Image (tube, rainbow, N blue to C red):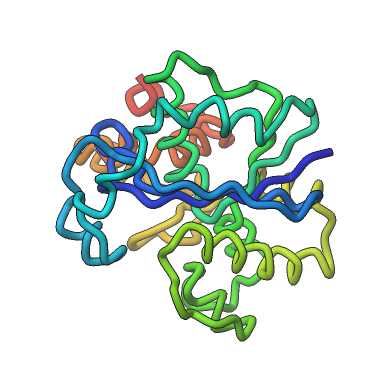
Length: 233
């Protein structure tokens, strides 16, 4: 078994048009890290610059993603039992990584198993008001210094994951992540997918919510309801 904690920084929030600026992978078994700055070949959004404290000039000496993709995939290896772990992984990191790999004509291996620790935290720590990585750091008394650098975030997420694993195995966390079936945000946050009104789902579709949140659409498709034809087509 292999397990890697993934964190990305990007030029913006839309995986369809924004690019990776930093990628870190922490190999939990071998205790080694792959961490690279990546030239995004586009300007960062003002929000991304505010969060990361970087602008395009900071990446002038870095290589674009296509020049590191082979090294990245070699680092992960080809173990058929591989876990990829990240916070908000299903909505963010996985989509960005997949988009960058597709630009390089590389497919995500179908055997990889994904653990989204945001979904896990929502499931096993329901009493917390929010489940951001920042709040989990505070909850578990982890330093927030240098947050929003990919290398710091993967190391902190490993500490959070170790706390989860005091009571759950890695495969338990995978099942919790995969089985998560609650609406993630706004006024219906925490409500089971099969209880969300159809009119609300239709409104979310008109607002292109599902285009930016593909994991929510996937959860809907796996939910026990038969009125989604207009939503999933």
